[in-house]
Length: 180
Length: 100
Image 1 (tube, rainbow over the protein chains, first blue to last red):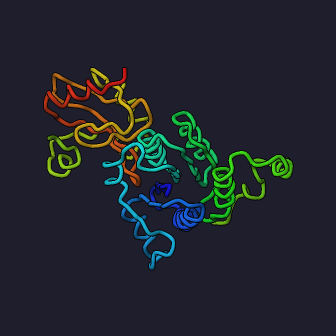
Image 2 (image 1 turned 135 degrees about the vertical axis):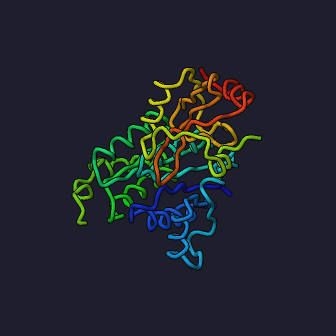
Image 3 (image 1 turned 90 degrees about the horizontal axis):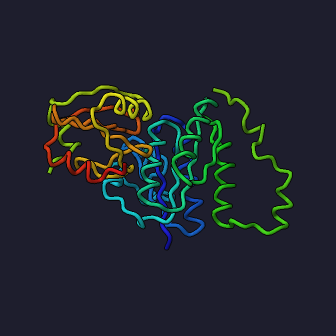
């Protein structure tokens, strides 16, 4: 079975925990054994959100995980990037694992969002999907779905391409300022 | 074997030059202030801990003071620049894994 690791950052953003659970069930659904690496506080949020471990079965501490991490341990890296430190962690995990990777970049501030996106782009060959998000996880969920669809089928057939041709890369509605 | 995490917990003999900063600011501080700078890959084990950052990660070496200066990142607190005394053999190990 293929193995995926989801790397969580500081749990300051309310979107992170629900999206971590969502991403875990998506990746599990496409055949990955998923491990979530996080800080102790992000782990506690997951434990309270999913007390019977219906979705997230494997949780590990980010520091001890990093300490023992080796190339080949995972087939896919999904990193939540919402802070400068999260860029550093994602890039570090990426360079150790040297595997297919996706950075899910999000922030409420457009300037910071672009800064984090550029920092990941300059330091890795990872796929990047991003959205302005804080309280509302929907913009990120939509983009995560699209990115994971590409993971399942990197070359969709011509008909699908034609169907998607009019779809803008950025959905203006999703980029609207969210309510606090 | 020298261990950075244990050392920072148990000793007071270290200097924090920057705290709660961005990685790039910490890297710039090291580049501008260390007498010798060795660049390493992110994830390289330096003084017993994986170095976290964006490549190339600078490690400052000061043989006169017997110290190294390195970025130290935590998920919720950002990056700090820490200067710690380390034995000469640890400084040699850092030079050996340099990518310059």
